[in-house]
Image (tube, rainbow, N blue to C red):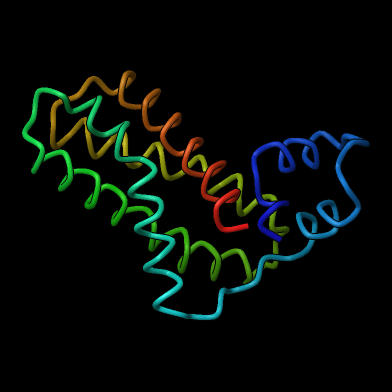
Length: 149
């Protein structure tokens, strides 16, 4: 499923492109499932996300110490990652809604909340932090799916 959870497959399914594979179309149009809780897998995914987004946090917080940059990265992801992985998947399984909408919601929610976190706690311009956080999340989404797939 990982190869179907990437941004390109999601966009193709959302615009009903004939280029999307039947497998991806089926998976992205299927209902969202609550993930089985496996703490070791979750921790791996969390730290992979943090390591992939590290360069973006180091750049946007370049006037802060290395320690503050790492703390910002960790806590910003801690405000979004568990919500997406546990709460949103549970919420989307109640209705039930298709997995493509879960992915879309998650990948819009995370950068907005993380940008707000940087804006409030580190006084970074909100528009600038939104741009950087969308890039960071897109980068970690694409590369994370590739590495875990």
